[in-house]
Each structure stands twice: as structure tokens, then as C-alpha cells.
Length: 214
Image: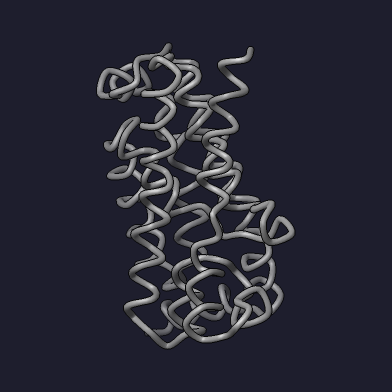
């Protein structure tokens, strides 16, 4: 249990570094929580700052947070597989709900990318395929994110053993599935607000009707 707690702490502390908040506040003097979408992530950092350099820098660092959380946990805690997955999960949790900025945070996609790059990069490929399919249909980034996030674990189920055979962190099939579902839930929760807003504004339906009329 001590090892698990250590893994959680390592992941959360690294993941909770509020990259977007630091960059936008330092270079533009803007509190990103009160600007744009209020999301403390790379896309909003770019939109609020108007700087591609800031947006890309935030994106890369947020990805690295996921990678380092897993790697540091492996080095310091002996490479225990369950502890490694706990560190990856808590890194995304920390990114989404950072203790340093009153539990504001991003939506977890970049940090998840970093975690999966170390655990099982083939899941990134699956997620991207699902995202493209959704985006082509609806032409909305948030809907694409939701669709890919929800259906990645669903698609995994019938070929779970195959995906697990490609993992760099060796755990049982069931453990890998629980890990992916847990991360998907973290991402889904952070996308509920924009999704509900789009539904309220009718933009999703409008996009579908416009596509049908074309």
C-alpha cells in the first residue's frame, strides 16, 4: 500500500503542474481560468495568448508530464506494474484537478497521450482513428474527443488480449481495461461542460443538418 501511495503521489504532483496557467500568466499576464473557455490546457492557452509558441510549449510539457510520471515511478518504486498504472492515472487526475490552482485544470488529453505512450502507444492510434471518424461526421473537436474517449475501451473489449499483448507494462487483460476505462472517465468528466453547452446551443444538430442538406 505504501508503494501504491507513493506512485499516486509522484503522478499527482507531476501531473498537477499547471503548465498553461504558468505560461499564460507569466508571458501574457492573464489568468487562463478566467479567459476563453477557462480550460487550463494547450488549446485554450493558444487561443487566449494568441501565441502558437505558448500553445505548442504547453502541449509538449503536458505530454511530458504523463511520460515522466510513469518513468519516475518505475525508477523510484521498482517498476511494479500496478504502481506504474496508478502513477499514470494520478498524473491525469492531477492535470485535470490541480491542487495548485484551486483544482482547476485541463481536460487530460495531452497528459493521457504521454501516459499511453509509455504504457501502450497503440491505444493512441485507436483513439485517433475514432476521433477522425467523429470529426468528419460532426466537425467539432469536443464531440470528437468525447466519441473517441468513450468508444476506445468499448472497441478494446473484443480484442482485449491482443491490445494487452502490445502493452509495455505487463498486467492482466482486466487490469488494462480498468485502467483505460478510468482514464476515459477522467477525460469524459472534463468534456461534459462543453458537450452540454453545444447541445444547449443546438450546434451539434445544426452541423448534422447542414451536412445532410449539402
